Length: 427
Image 1 (cartoon, rainbow, N blue to C red):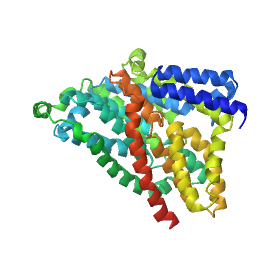
Image 2: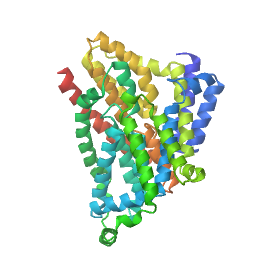
Image 3: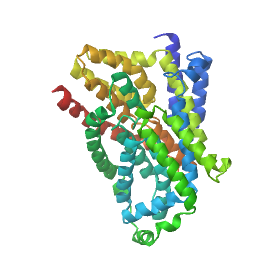
Image 4: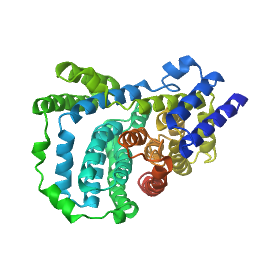
């Protein structure tokens, strides 16, 4: 690699260390790293702001912005309070039952929507229900972020890397259902068990709190029924457009922005009220992170890492598939999995052709990238969004608080996928 590439790696590692140790605010670390990358010409303004594969992913930024506005309007209707009481009553006030319920809802919803949208909708409910039961919301939020990444792996639209893989590999929505979804169901069940080991034994059941929750009438929580129906109608249209993306060909970001615009224009909600719930620090953090990772793409660092990892397998399908799974999980824990998959997919395409059309390599890439995002607090977009929401609500989650659980979940889920790939495709 060139000197510039090594300097880029050094800048990225320093910024990442600052984010991980929380010596400086993560937004300041990301923006500082992005600024240095531009200063040393590791990436240029044109690439940073306009490149599809090595710049800021505006689809992610504006998808988040649109959905944050929609969620902000929904919050004014009281619907999250309604859902919080409903969920607590279904769980009979028992914290772990509640966690299982929220985890399953998050995983299923993430398979139908993108996982970021799901956590934006579930997180407000989590805060309210935890407040009712007087339990710490942090374990719930961590579990939901991880469930969204696991559930999102099941379908083509659940996680952005899957869309890239489908486009490059000529794979369909049904292909993902047939090859990814069965294992995702198993992983979700295993994850529920891990939640019990990691969090469940620390929960304390409070009979008095549970009894008070059971006595509540969730219907009384609705503050504005007209606004609620308007918001739900717009949200339903937005979700339908997400699912119908292969037919409509509208980017999720466009759909979210249109939905937010219609909701603000058609209701009595003011612009100031609509944008009050937008997590601006989270959006800026993403922009800085995209620029830094884009610099690694521009200088050829990610491509060299990918090629080196594949070369050690000597082109054998078995070793290549399992190696690709492990490397993708490891790298997706450190850098955003979207640019990683965008860089790696042309290499995998060549390997698939060289190995007689072995689609197992595509599934290894998808599983590794999707599940690897659970390993660290910055490994996936859903994780970053959850951390931003937690900080805004006065219960910050540190990098290591998330990562110490994420490493366990990633290790277990990836270890389970390896024999699945071996038995189904390679034996």
